Length: 147
Image (cartoon, rainbow, N blue to C red):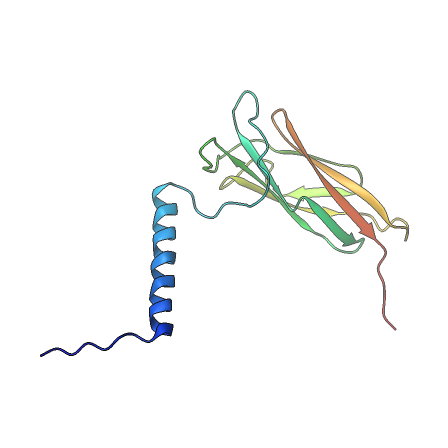
């Protein structure tokens, strides 16, 4: 005779969570999409029909920091698109990337600003994919040193 004990609620909850996680991973793999960037999707671009996401959309930084920004280019189904030219135009400072074309559907770059003044100011960076431009606002604040 087999005796069955009910599962403790904690174990049952863990099994449900693990099942949900496995199902969502399998669903993402079958649809050809892994983890996508969150945020607003801009587009479609012309003539390629791409969609663009930029993260983060706004940054607050001290002039000695170097924040990274990521631009993702997707097709209409949300799949990453390779080898798409992404251009960047900063209002000040420089924006450097390893490549100006998407790899794995993204381009990641670093924004660097000259020390300039200690006055707070707002800079911006325009990311352009074909005819779609996305502006990222960058608030630059003075460095505060604690004594």
